Amino acid sequence: MAGNVQTPAPVGAAREQDRKARSGWPGGARVWEDAEQQAKKLKSSADGEPHRKLPKRKIVLLMAYSGKGYHGMQRNVGSSQFKTIEDDLVSALVQSGCIPENHGEDMKKMSFQRCARTDKGVSAAGQVVSLKVWLIDDILEKINSHLPPHIRILGLKRVTGGFNSKNKCDARTYFYMLPTFAFAHKDHDVQDESYRLSVETLRRVNGLLACYKGTHSFHNFTSQKGPREASARRYILDMFCEEPFVREGMEFAVIKVKGQSFMTHQIRKMVGLVVAIVKGYAPESVLERSWGEAKVDVPKAPGLGLVLERVHFEKYNQRFGNDGLHEPLDWTREEAGVTAFKEQHIYPTIISTERHERSMAQWLSTLPVHDFNASAHAAAGPGTKVGAGDVGLEAGAPFQALGQASHPLYTDVLVSIVQTSKLRRREVRQALGVTQHGRAGPGRWNGWLATPQCCFVFAPHSVPSDLGQRLRSGACLPVRGTEV
Image (cartoon, rainbow, N blue to C red; front, side, top):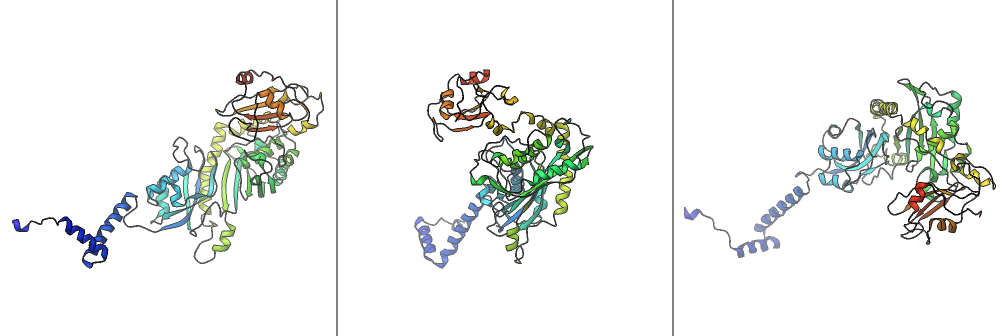
């Protein structure tokens, strides 16, 4: 029995076997390769990948979703407070076995890119995302089985390895669905669901929407964009309002807009300004003025009715759509599924939410507080009475602080200037107690914008210590405006 016991090899022998394996000795090479393969398996298991590795392929997914209850499309990694569409999508991709778990934590590992970053509450019927996945069997069914019913993957296509859904997209088409009483004149009851859009009003709406076509500077239709910034110039291919239709006793209309790209809130503000003009709150001339260098107060329509309908890849299709290896990205076969999803989830959500929350009616009630004639007051002379926003004070009177400190680093001060032209910067700094000025930075003048009616001042903590109290009380700052 003692002769059958195997004694461990001496340390020196083990080292000799390792040396022979490294030097190419046949008897030791197999041992070395087995150990190396075992190490690779352990590393692969630690990374969360399957032992039998499937090839990853670049694909695009056609998505449709109802955005109500979500804080937009884009995922906010590390923030579970604000739920997004991509949170649910990535979770479904991991659970279905399309991607490893660590790819869900770092989306760059699967080369993920969305075609459009929709805002809070905005829906989509034709969103397209590109990513690398394992092409498992029944991939669409497995992904959808882990998604809620108001998020669906309607199509999948293989694309080139370097495809990027955002960069390869030539244009995007959105539609905005709204109750037609939004176009009723301001003297009409804004909550009257019996209102029906007339042919004349529809013709006027389309005439105004057509003015957006072409290339313009839309700096007034977004935030943090200057009139001379090249990125503020956007090209609109088409914009029109379709024939109205009735749902559940309320008449709705759909505005469609196709453009190369859009900035944050741009479409909602484009719709909002047209509504303000049709209702009689703003003159038609404000459209041309909004593309100029002057700052124009443009109202932002609710996000509920905005839907990303389609994205376009004309150049990609021309180059790769008929090469025999790739399919054109036109989604013709998926059109029936897109239509069904809109009828089941998007339209009912917009209609029911509008009925219960009355978001459009509430927003319409805020239009009278907007001032669409700010630049018109520049022509007013001394002693001229100005609008209700300036409480009927005479031009040249002291200006009054109306805002309130709100930001922990910078103080946002809204000052109503009742005069014929802009204040000198020195006088504004003197009024606020700001001694330094410059482009930006701690302890410096951060930003300044003045119109004949209002002045937005962004200043650091060098403002007077009692400024907050003075703002809340509405006390006049003891400085008079001087014409420049």
